[in-house]
Length: 155
Image 1: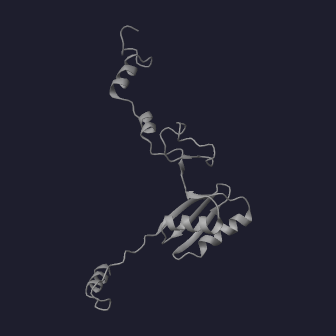
Image 2: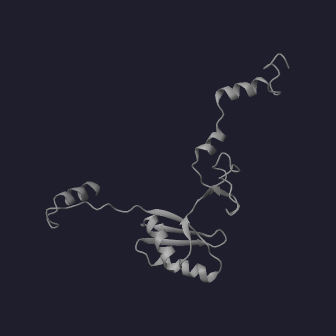
């Protein structure tokens, strides 16, 4: 069907001389951090998103302060709408499971406010330097290792 749709769009004379192909929105899962204190807040957040065009499903996890929206929507528009309709501070979900991060307790990654099992998603070059040691550092640390008695004759 894709080739036929493409050909019909090329030879379509009904739209005039300037025919632009519309990009279809992708099905996306948008995760948002919003403070949810009570059932009233939960209802307010749910109603702010359910009326949006393209929204398929809405899932709210009040203990994690997390809103998950699935549908043909743009993340920026969902964040703006929730912020406008509820008057709350809203941001895209900034956390990842701590298993994904190489150093979950590094400065800037660990967040006390994060839900259990999550740390902040940070793309910081200083944090990534903690994960990798240079070859000379590895050579010196293994040369004087207690685990390898033949590594150094002096020991």
